[in-house]
Image 1 (tube, rainbow, N blue to C red):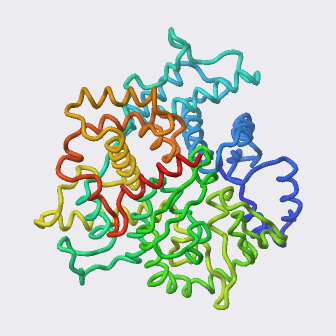
Image 2 (image 1 turned 90 degrees about the horizontal axis):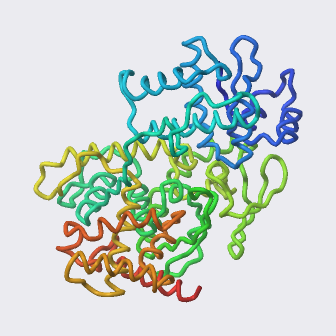
Image 3 (image 1 turned 135 degrees about the horizontal axis):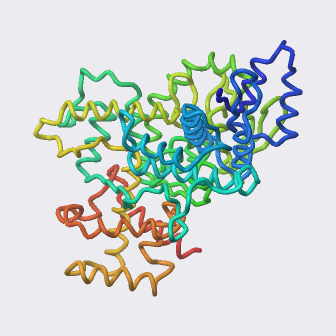
Length: 487
């Protein structure tokens, strides 16, 4: 079984001069409302669509699943179908024994068994597939019996809480300056450093720490959103995110001045060289890009040429793929509108940021024995751990602002319950939940377990937590409290 994904740009690029005209293929995709990124399963012998898999993924695409999610689902489905084929089965002849055997293979038998979290995702998807097959009449009944409570029998028995890892101030500075910036633990320059764009990587970390944005949010920020060309020194900026947010949930992001200053350092010192080196490459891809010729800062819109015709996009409604190909024409050639770019002149993707993080971890380990180095965790830091740090520190500070220090853990727990009932607008938990874009405050509630941990805040007050000398979390929190009053 051959797996591919719909990509209109590849159609236009590779079908020129061939039997199928790109324009006709493009029109057919539009007529069928087939979105980019939708998986297509083809029979290797006949190269015809494999049903009912293709119809199911079109159903998922119509439900609004994004390209990244569909790709992940497609690989899970392909793995499951290949397993069934190894047992001379297909989706419409599957038995309960086949499914349970696949469960045992993935969690116990294969050379590297997967954990509960990974298996839970696969089990949920397989369950959804069978439910859809029964609903559409492809199967008379589900091959798996339900549990006594009507649950999914494939679901993991062990329930894990959120894996909330956060950094101390010394750990964050070590990660940013030594790992990402290539300095020595005593803050001196490391002449042996061979990394690339340290100011870019440090600015990305500062932006993540001061805003609590997810990696897909801060890594896809565009220059007009930060408004660096229009802001006055010492002022923060606020902009909305939606298309790049999880579940497309709209929220406002406040970026304080210290994080903006870090980004401006990168824009002035490193980014021009990256732009100049990539102008020729971008010029050769002109037809594939969204070339912006007008930026409407007041309403947050970009106007330009895309796919041969004039288009207008609301910036917050632009997804990661469109942002990646968004450029503007300058006197020196084409320049990406993405803040964080690489040597190709385009926005860095998830794999590039993963590589940067792994290289930073190796540098930190190399200096772990230095007396200036803080204690490192057993597993390497993730970008999402910076988001956890933002949430925990902000939550602690807001609670102290509401009540001050409480003498014991029992009093602190009682305070949390009182807030939920009587202080909806200014409740620290709900404020942090809104700022993080959580779907439910129950997700944010998990942070309360860590706010009572004496290891996190006994030796340093929250006001001492800062990214730059101009920026403290107190400033960020005060801005959030005043903006809440305006609403």
